[in-house]
Length: 82
Image (cartoon, rainbow, N blue to C red; front, top):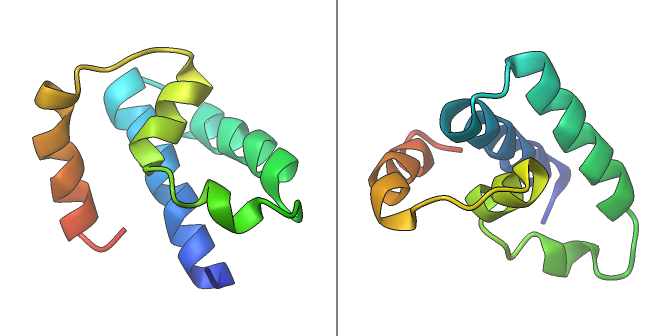
């Protein structure tokens, strides 16, 4: 995954945090940056990006989401080009 794709991935994680977990934008950015620092540069870096950004947002928020309810809205985000 190139750097542009990684940026898009993390932007979608941030959007999921604000849209599904009511994070404000600043907190979503900080939370994603904190996790990104932990992930970046490790040998498993590319494997990490196989997870859905929605799942990463759930992990950050330490909350589960009803995927049947959230999935249609999430796929709309994906279609927007995230």
